[in-house]
Length: 154
Image (cartoon, rainbow, N blue to C red; front, side, top):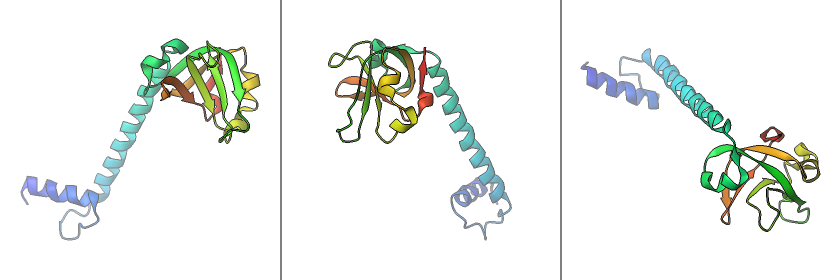
């Protein structure tokens, strides 16, 4: 078989199980293993890259410049609210400026709240750092906290 033709057959075999007539059926398990290893390495590299961006925290007022990034945002919890009667029973932790002039908000959904205890009381008046995806909600930066490991006291 010509080298290019063999490569083409091999590429088709990786994506399907039709290798019976190709004469390279013993290569298939090896190539799948290589492909899985490559995907695992790419995933690990992505996590490491994300982790390094977490090592440089942003001030709450600078978070708006980093929407869409994974990072760490630090600030003082100056106002907090547990919206018990709202849809989703959200908890809001506003950093550096109180609502409605808040510059950054940490949002904890009601389904995740038991993991945090009473975050609106626990973190009130304390300086915290929160790690995760910096998102935009109605023109203001925010971050969803789903795990207590995302929030650390400074």
